[in-house]
Length: 328
Image (cartoon, rainbow, N blue to C red):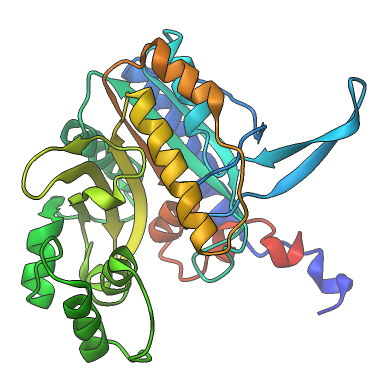
């Protein structure tokens, strides 16, 4: 396609109006609940350590940094927002751009819009209620939704696949995947890799049919930045929200222990080393903020572009983006 055509947006006037209307409703929703809108930097001296994500890297050159300084575009505003929480901000939200290397496809763009918010005094269950309230508010007059449902991760796997994700061996998970998905039987994945494959290919397409589906209490190995509930099995106090088979949001009852968070960062880096991925600097400022004291809180990141796509009954993210990466 020539530049004579590439200059044109891929979205429509109606989609632009939907985004503007939704942003206004979001701001009204949080203002009515006393949640403060904030703004944090897109650039950071730290990158994400998550082995499933890759940060964009750039370089600052100028006064005071004649040799240059590596900076990273954020994959989420989470760390900076937690620093505000530790400083006493109270409940906060943000609508911002986020960036993830290599994420290109029908439901992915390397630059996308996140709605992220944090609620001191909430746990992940109470935050699920608020996510449902917000999505219902935005869907009014556009997308009829049935009552949201909550599904325990372990029970969901038992019902859909006849396997317990908390006790099954790696070989049992592999065999289940080979039976149900057209994959190479010699594929070599770790336990969470097989669980993710089964979730994305077999379970997720069945979720959120005409309603929000909240899946909660993932394995402790998938806690990310969530607290872990002790027990047998130990469970991550996190949830994901799905609508029509598409993941919309990822929420946590937030980990507040700086020592545990450092250990998770270091474990991430070891996993990255074993996979041959780049070793990246983790966020020491976040750890200092946690050490100072993060209030007991829950937080969630919601993919606004994906939600707008669902509200407009679209199929491809380009329909709600002015200029996807192919036209940037």
